[in-house]
Amino acid sequence: MKVVDCEGLVKEYGRSRALSDLSFQISENKITGLIGRNGAGKTTLLKIMAGFQKQTSGDMRVFGEKPYNSLLASVNSILVDDQMAFPVSLNLGEVLDASATFYPKWDAELARRLFEYFSFRTEYRHSELSKGMKSTFNMIVGLASRCPLTMFDEPTTGMDTSVRKDFYRALLKDYIANPRTIIVSSHHLEEIEDLLEDILLLKNGKKLLHVPVSDVKEYAIGVQGKTSVLTDWLEDKEVLYRKAIGTEITYVVIENKYTEKIKQDARKLGFEVSPVSSNDVCIYLTSKGRGGIDAVFE
Image (cartoon, rainbow, N blue to C red; front, side):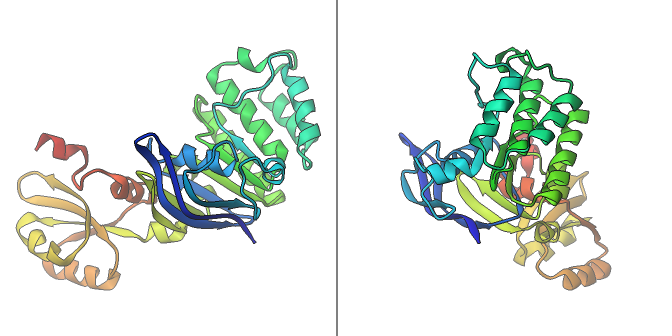
């Protein structure tokens, strides 16, 4: 079943285009990482999915319906971000009680246990919390809602390291016990990689990749060798990143299209071959140039 079906999506703000001809599908019961640099269009896309905004053109379907002003999409989805707001007249305990009346699959026991684990006090109000505590409380609401489509937009903003680890652990354990479609937006892939099944990578509002995590892990390979030899060898290769090491050595990251051929050439030409992490692959693919920040100083 397709939970999200996006076709030719465009979102413009005046003269600025946040999303451009974006097409993808997300099926049920998967954890997808929505990855990209700041300004890539991740938040805009999630807000359209959640029905908070309407696209300029193209089509977005959530559970088969256009999410904007859709009660079905609203009841069955939740967007957790740092803009979540709750009535100032309600304390935290009352917010959780009110949430139970809106979300059909609300797990009050899970909410209570997480609330106690993170040492919240019932009488506090959301507006009184620190940035990190707000993110933690929002996470509790997101997990306990058990929405068939649960979206987290940079969910760990302000959290310290131990709380971030607790959040990811709680998300995985609850997902295993109660499978549903979860989308986690982040520009820190290394933190969430072990949670994900698929990655949707955006750059400047466009889709670069939408593949299983395992494919991203094998997408590129690092090669290091003498610059004079490496330069000629690279003529027919797609270079994602290049860095000079001293005056005679160059390190490059290339698409891993012909693994065995690359390894054979490396042995023959004296190159060193190394794996490239998924996080680095995404960084190189979304970089403005192939030399990274080093290119600024050349």
